Length: 216
Image (tube, rainbow, N blue to C red; front, side, top):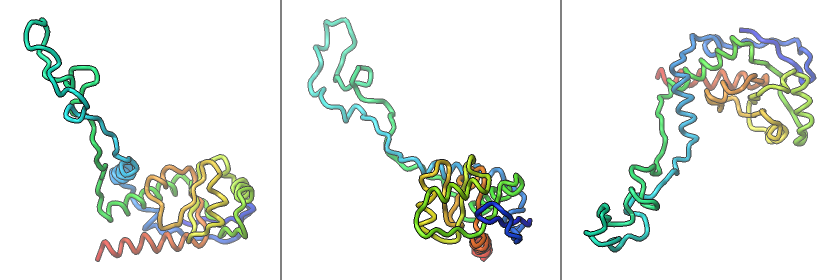
């Protein structure tokens, strides 16, 4: 799949880049996409929900009232789950939410997500971004020139550039990541993938290297 490379002013640069069919043209695996997204969302959970059981409630050291003669149930303690202020039965306790996937499954899921973006024509290539200093207005102007200002945009760069990152972090619905880091969820969550020219090589190398490691 070949795509045109645009300048930051929105005009065509005259260059085209080939996106590997091994990454952007596979047969998507919806099951693995689902599993990888589920794993990503599960790992965002803190797992700190907690309620007190009857053994953790304060009070109830003595018998609430006499055994006989009240006409009601025999209360051994006011910490009973049946009473207001008592302990919770089978309440939540802190634990981790972990969904494990193999490296190969994750890579197939990412490639499937990239393939879907390619089919939807939701990938745009742009010349490498360069800022002398963080400038949000300059980043907003670039997005406007590329006609993606009103969309959820995931910008993929070749490496960490703090000036680029700081220029885009305050713009709503814009995320900036290195090309070797986006998850399946982050790829699918974006309306448009804005990939810089040098980031294409990084993306190819990362996913092809992963394939070689899995095959080995």
